[in-house]
Image 1 (tube, protein in one colour):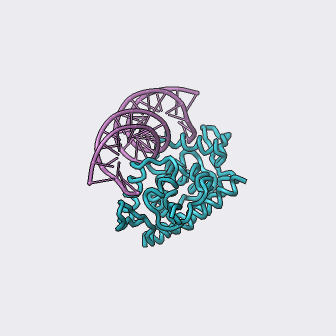
Image 2 (tube, rainbow over the protein chains, first blue to last red):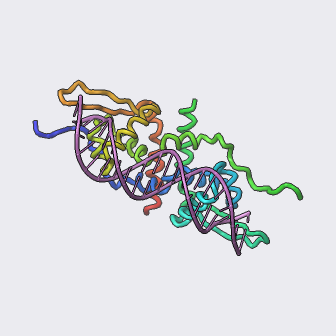
Image 3 (cartoon, chains in turn orange, brown, green, yellow):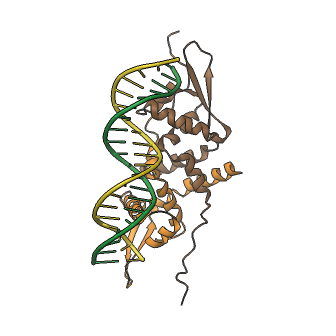
Length: 110
Length: 110
DNA sequence: CTGTATCCTTTTAGATACTG
DNA sequence: CAGTATCTAAAAGGATACAG
């Protein structure tokens, strides 16, 4: 016997999973997506949503997500500086993943 | 007008998303789950599956996943030391999340 | 084959102070 | 309100050598 194994071969390395993970690499990123699914939110709203996140890190995550095309940034023409973030069409594509995460979490918790 | 905002309030902080993220925090973890969904695999098989992972990091991830109850470790009674890792029932619960990740990745890629 | 031990780098994040 | 700047810490990961 020469063949070293008859085990099933794993999926190819170009698995789309890797692509998805490039987007969800940070725990904060996933949470930001979640909160924006409720609708557009201001920078300050997100800071309150994501209790504990620092302004620096929030800015970093938002900039990254903007580069990736997940969210869009818009300055509001208000008196005091205000900025609104909203999901792009691409960003909305992740909803099924978040829903699946929530479902499995509930099952494990119970 | 005193209320500072009429914006939708975000979901409660005990969102199950956080629980799920505790499991999928590492990119390697998600990939390991994926490969184990094909069936039980040896330590060396996983090293080849996860091209680029070091033995140290693979061990770290596997130990952590074992503690979390995602996988089970079993020493095989072979002549040379061999260890098999397989998903637990809890580990299998994550399949829908992985599937959703793959679907969105494919949509974004195209 | 399945790890452990060391050392080092990168990424992520927190704290704090400050600005337009 | 929405950031920037700076410094620091913790976590994740890589490389290499070595062990049972």
